[in-house]
Length: 112
Length: 111
Image (tube, rainbow over all chains, first blue to last red; front, side):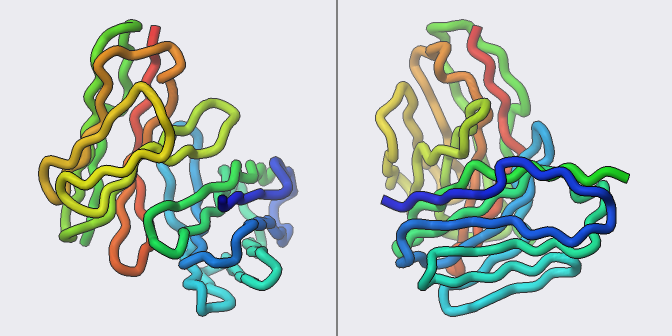
């Protein structure tokens, strides 16, 4: 059964810092991996999707990598801003595409 | 472009009352549809998924049921709510590339 773990659970940084959020999964037979952002009381916003055949994806200040052999993904945020404060969730799609399994998230706080 | 609508945004219901949450998707056909629940301090738990009309798979035993009466409509129901059904319910859809998109969620409080 797929399990997704995110470390750290919470992170506080000053504005301008570069930071890395970590995600690990137990079953490397995934279809893809997706990173989301969730603001308090809101739904999830898709940030980046990495297909299983890809190694990384970039969008603006965000870069996500995928290493299936080690069961790890990282989300790199460059030059963090207070508006980046949110909970970041990592999720792995099973090979059948029928279930997206989530980690518990990393809650990021960026202070100005 | 595709959009997903979920309502209501908040709901307060007494124990033992019925529940019906609705989710609709626009701008795509034959999507995979999902219901998730997010309880306080816990991760997102997959409740149901559907790959087509009338096709529902349940991931966990619970007091809830789901139905898909139309291609782009997904409904979460309960005949009698329990206190433990309180939580944040999220509907999602995915297409051929399996990128998932979520609705804005329904905050359900059972009192």
